[in-house]
Each structure stands twice: as structure tokens, then as C-alpha cells.
Length: 253
Image (tube, rainbow, N blue to C red; front, side, top):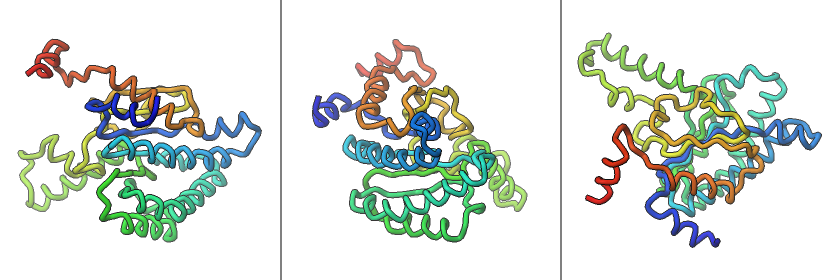
């Protein structure tokens, strides 16, 4: 099936927002008797392919979990190599993203990153700020609990300062202070590598996402693998608390 015909097949059911935990880089390298960092480098190639495919399909937002707040627990050498790879990827890919009309946004607690990495993030975000195609969100030193916690902390500060009445605090208000404020919530969550958990990723935003798990390791996750996930998503009935009959009635209305 050609890419054009596949895009047509997904018409009307293509997710607005896809969120991915890119798991399995280290195991991919280990299977090939290579250092773990080789798997992370190979994973960058998969990122490039998936970004391109999402752009072709008209996906509005693609959020990738690049580095969690728990990843600092990994061996110091691996963490250092991961952060170096992040810098290199930003330097090499920013112009390509800009050329493809992709807008980059990095979310997470950036305070632990080096000045060099923070400068590269700012440079890439500024370069792509005016683009109106795919929004690529990279979660780095991010945790879902941190995200909710910082939102609540901000709101509590406003209440304490007398700028906000506690009675008006609502789910909607909290959402406005989360890292993905202003963006649609993920329709489809994908985790590669065989694990079946969300690992503190977008805990608030994934409340009604369709969860897709695959044994495929991230460096092997290509456009064809994404198409399989999208076919699965197209077959899901999204109820949002309604019954199946209600959903069908809404479709016919």
C-alpha cells in the first residue's frame, strides 16, 4: 500500500496528537554486542522517520519522551553520553525541522541541564517558532508528577498572593498550567520495547488516550510500524465515558 493510499485510509481517524515512549535503545544495542549509546544513536534515526511520517499524515502534535526525571539514576557515563547526544541532535536536526515547517518545543525541568544544552534548546525553539506544521514536543528531564506538582504550586502561589480565589480552582485551570497547555491531549500513546506502563509520562494528559504497546525496540520502529499502530487506533471506538450505542448515534447525527 502506498503512503498516499494509507493516508487516505486513516482520513478522519488520524490522531491529532501522538505521544511516544521510545523504549528499547539499550537492549537493541546489547543484542548486537554494541555499547548502549549506539542504540541511542540509532534511535535518533527512528525519530527522524517518525517525525517525517507524522508530518505527511497531518498529525498536529508528536510528543516524544526523550529523558525522564528518573533517568538520572542511570550510570553517570550513560547519562553524560545521552545529554551529549541531545546537544548533537539539536545542532544537526534543527535546520531540517525548520525546513519541514516543524515547530519544536521542549518541556520539563531544564534547570539541571548545562548552559550549553539550554542554549541549544532555546536556539532550536526560536528557529522553528514561526512554523505552523507539526508541533514536535520533546519531554526532557520530565515527569508527569513533576508536571502536575509545578502546576499546583503555581496556582497555590496565586491563591496565597490573593490573585486567585481557591473556589475557582478546577481541572480546566490546572490544565492551563501544565506543560502541554494549549495543545490537544494525546489521542494515541505508543510505547515500544515490550513494557506496558506509562512510567510517569503525561499522567494527567493520558487520561483518555488509547494505549498501544509493541515489542518492537525503538531503533526498529519505522514508518511501517507506525502505520500498524495507526491501523489499530483507527479500529478503536473512543467513548469518553459514553456507551458504544451513544457514540454511534453521535456519528449518525
